[in-house]
Image (cartoon, rainbow, N blue to C red; front, side, top):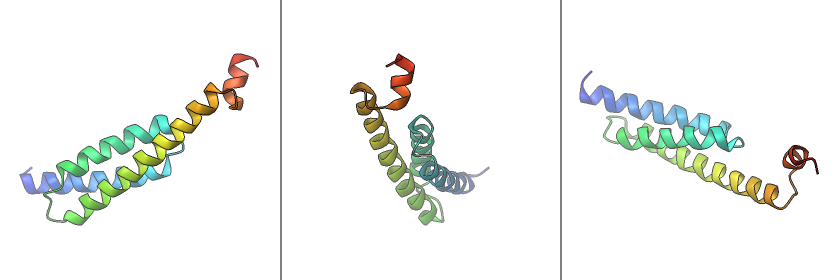
Length: 93
């Protein structure tokens, strides 16, 4: 596989993972790794002939990372302050 095909494949994978990351952002344990890997592929595929795919993948992954991080932060806050039903059931409160 030559360099041009490899970067085009990276750009496509980045865009696909970016879309998946936007779908699963409400599960941060899945959304963060998927979006991070997609961002890595997008940066590696930035020199692809279809550069727009890499740019779209990078943007989608950054949005997915942002949403997942905010959701994880809210969940941690709610769990720490006793406002999260799942954590309360685990602790028996």
